[in-house]
Image (cartoon, rainbow, N blue to C red; front, side):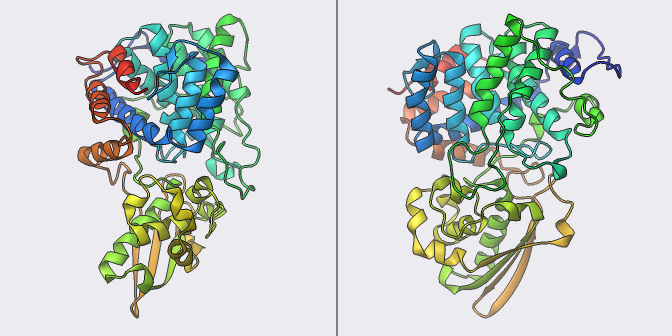
Amino acid sequence: MDTTRKSKLVTPSGECSASVLAAYCNGIARLPAGAHRCARRTLLDTLGVAAAGSMTQAGRASLKAAGEIWGDGAAPVWFSRRRLPPVGSAFVNATYAAALDLDDGHRQASGHPAAAIVPAVLAVATSAGSSGNRLLSAIVLGYEIAVRISAARDISTIRTTDTGLWCGAGVAAACGWLTGQSTAVIAHAIAIAGQTATSQAATGWTKLGHTVKEGIPWATANGLQAVALAAAGHRGPLDILDEAALYDRQRLVGNYSKSWAIEEAYFKLYSCCRWGHAAIDGALALAQRLRAGPNDIEGLLIETFERALTLPNQNEPQSAEAAQYSIPFCVALALVHGEKALLPMDNAHLCDNRVTGLAGRIRLSSARDYAYSFPAGTPARVTMTAKGKSETIEVLYPRGEPQNPLTARELQEKFLKLSSALSQEQTSDIATMVNGLGIHQDPAALIEALSGSS
C-alpha cells in the first residue's frame, strides 16, 4: 500500500475535532509517492510566485520591518542572505508568496493554503534538520488540515472567505508534526491558531487596496507561534471546531481516503483574484474568435456568480492590490496587453487609459444559473460585441483548475517567468533541488539555492 497509518483512526462523537485532526497527523507513517509529487509541484509554484513577490512593495516592507519585530535568527529569507527566527522568516516569505495573488488555491477551501504552509514548513525544516520526505509530508498534511477546516464551513453563509481565517491552523498542524510534537500539543496549537486568527475586519466593505489583503503572512506567523505556545503549556479551546452550526463534522474529520487535498490544487496564470479568471479566459477566446482588437470592442458583458460582484471591481484602481480585485480592469488589461501582462501585473498599467477606458465598457451581472456554483466553481459567461457582431462563450473551469489543468511545461514556464529577476544559475538550482527533493536532494541544498542571491 502507498499509505500506512500507525493505528486505525477512531473518531468518537465526544472527541474534539481538533484532537481528531492532530491524531490523524500523528497517525501517518508514510505518504504515497503521488502526494509527494504534488507537493513538489506546489512547492516550485510557490517559490516562483514568491520570487516575483519579493520585488513588491509589500515584500520589501515586510523584510524591512521583520528584523525590528523578531530580531535576527537562523532561518533564511528567500532570495537573500538575511536570516531571521523561523516565525519572522515565514512571515516575510509568506508575504512574498501572497503579494501578487498568483499563489495556488483549492476550490473546497476557497483560498490559498500553500502561501502559508510552504514558507512555514521550510522555515521550520531549516532548524529541525528534516529529511526531504518529511518536509514534503509536512506540506501535504498542513495543506490537508487547512483545507478540511475551511471546507467544513458553509462558505455561502460567512462574511468572508479570507485565507488568514483558517490557514494558520494548517501551519500549526504541519509544523507541530514536523517537529515531533505530541498529539495533545498539536491539537492545542490548532485551537490556539484558530482562536487567535486574523479578524480581516475590513474585508467586505473596504474599497481601498492594501497589502494586508487576506492576512496570510500574519496567520502563518501566528500558526508557528501557536506551536511554541502549546509546547510550552498554553492551552487552546479544543472544541473550537465543534460548533455544529459552523462546521460540518463529517467534512472535517471524515471521508479519509487515499486522495489528498493537495492533489486537487489549482494554479494561476493571472495575478488577480481567482473569481475573475474564467472571465479573462472567455474574453481572450472571444477576441481571438472575432479577431477584435481593444478598440473594436463596443461592449462586454460578464455574467458570473453573485459573490464575484462583491469585489471592489474598480475600473480605475489606484494600486496593484485594488487592481487584483477588479474583474473589469484585469479583463481589460489582458485584452489590451495580452495575458502575459498578468504574469505578473505591472503597476505602470494602472495609468493606461486604453485599459481603464475598456474596463469602463465592461458590465458585470450575476447569473441565475450560477447561483449555487460557488465555491465548487467560479464560472463566467462572456458576451462580446465587436465589429457589429456579438458572440457568447461560457467558461466553467478556468485554466489551471483540476478539470482544466496546466501542463508541466506551462507550470515550468510560469516558474521561469516569475523568477526571471534571479540569476539563471539560481533559478536552475532551485528547480533542480525541488524536483529532486526527497529523491536525491535534501532540504539543506534547497535552502542554499534559495539563499543564492545577495
